[in-house]
Image (cartoon, rainbow, N blue to C red; front, top):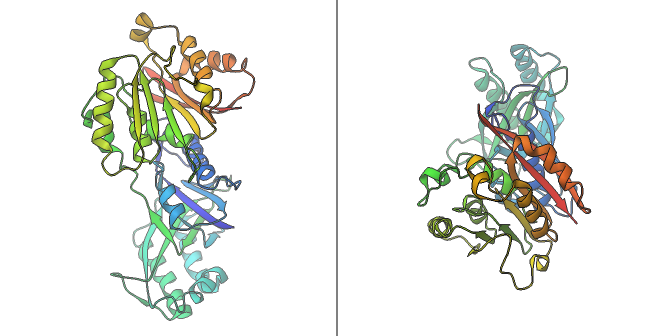
Amino acid sequence: MHRIFFFVTGGNFNTRRHLEPGEEPAFTLLEVASLLKACFPASDARPRYTAHRVLEADVPSFDDGAIRFLRRSVATQYVGTLDCKWVASSDDIEHAIREFTGALPSLEEVGRLARSLKGKGSAFAIAQTVHAIPVPKNADSEIKAAIGAVVRAESGFHVDLGSPDVSITTLVSRNHDQARKIVFIVSFRCTSFHTRGFKPRIARNRPAFEIGTMNPPLTSLMVNACHPPRGRPSLLFDPFCGTGGILIEALVRGIASVGVDADYGCIDGCLRNLRHYSGGKKAGFNVLHASTFSLPFREGPAAAKNGTVTVTDPPYGRLESLKCSPFDAYVEALLEISRSHALLCFAMPEESVDEVISFVGKHPGTAVVSVQRKREHSGFARAVLLLARG
């Protein structure tokens, strides 16, 4: 097994505020857990929130394919091998840095890894020092110098910032337990992710724009939360696709999708959006003009296999309630459509959560995996419900 770490964004997706020390990022944990399960379906890899903005997990492998797959996370800034973890005896950052740099020459994990580099090149670089907490000025250079001295002494490598054979990353955070001690992580294989890559897909930047449509990163998180297993035939179904916000996120992740909507204008906009974002992508998509209450599938929804997931944002809100069926009718339709699907993820107004969970409880074989509440603004909060079927 390989122990890896995730350094996650500083924002709390549930509250739209900065993630505070001691606070757990619930939506982030759900996303990373789901991606690990999809990446390693035969393994029980689960993330643990061990330090501020740091998750750890034990995985069966950590190759280029796994890194490419995990790159679809919108909550992760860095992922890497956890090669050395050292906890200071003090919660004072300046004292902890002095303690860490002094202990480095005798840390067996760092020395062993440095010695293992022999024969794998001749140059290294301390690529970056990432910190989840404020550090004193010059702290980065002190940490880099101390680690560099150990690597040079143990491996015989020289520093080359331009084209190193090995790039080393250090991370500084504070433990998530009550003691809040300073923790240092050293990684000899770490990759940075572009967490804001979804910005071109925000509704106002799409060819077709619909008022009230859901935006990434929420749509990205929902798709990732029930991501189909890697390397297996899969399909994402959105029975209320609108102009395709969720289908776009499936598309850029290489997941084939089918969308349905009763509004022909939305279908036209959805097709324009999907064609705009589909350049070079392997996943296909199909969009149907139909009512979710009377789907035109010849074999019915039960024909889908376990590689299918349903992700959607059904109609709700004041305007929708004036012209559409009650919200519980949409929930009933969703449960019927997805009864043979592996997972169902959908959004709702926060005040509907208890009623919907009670309603879901009356359907055998359906389990609530997670409820994520997300504050959108002072007057509105959504909830995202993830259900396991079967």
